[in-house]
Length: 298
Image (cartoon, helix red, strand yellow):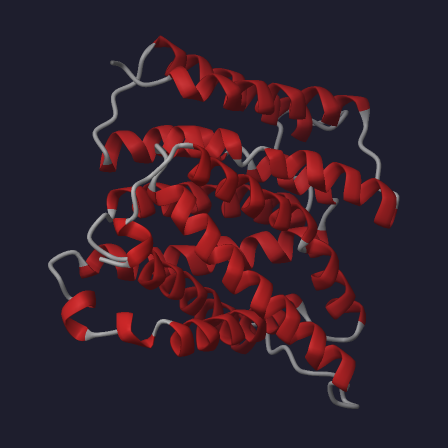
């Protein structure tokens, strides 16, 4: 196990780590939008930034990358984490590029609903009566947000909505897998997540036949890609530390701080505003998430 995993754990440190990670997630959409404006599509920027993050992790934590440490009887958890984290990240980034920031993030934060299901299946965490309340309230909030006048059933109305929902589903699964996998170091889990995002991003680039700007990538754009890669690497380490030492259902509530950061940033940076129905549905999703701390039976 790593030094980070061996240190005596104080409850405040994992919480601060999750708050720090949530703050970065609440702001990282903006540089990805700048990259898209520079002609670098979301799938390409995801692949490049996370590849930079993976290389940085490989250089710093190369001693942790040994076959005996990876194939320790729970390698399947690490590989699943890598794969699903890749889809969670690409869905998140494409969602914030194609949709309204707060709408996508609020749909992303249906994750507590999916966390309930995965925590029951993978961690054997049984639901209390609050668990069923969280499910009902979350789905009601989502229905209010997604309902459109004249429609009979509330469904996502844009690719951004769909990516937000899918990303939250994958994020919840990764959250539970990180908690379940206590045999791999934080460093290995972080590198697995960065590698997964780079690989899935590259695969999406091939499928969607994306290409770089015909004039090439400028030095400033390369520097922005590198800077975002470094930030994503640091955030991955911070988040894995917090998720490893915090119960899955508590962690998802702490990460709601991202919504506050994103709301302020979206208003001041891109002047985005939400409708009354979207605010009402979003507040219901947030409220349900707050109740998720009590949704497991003792």
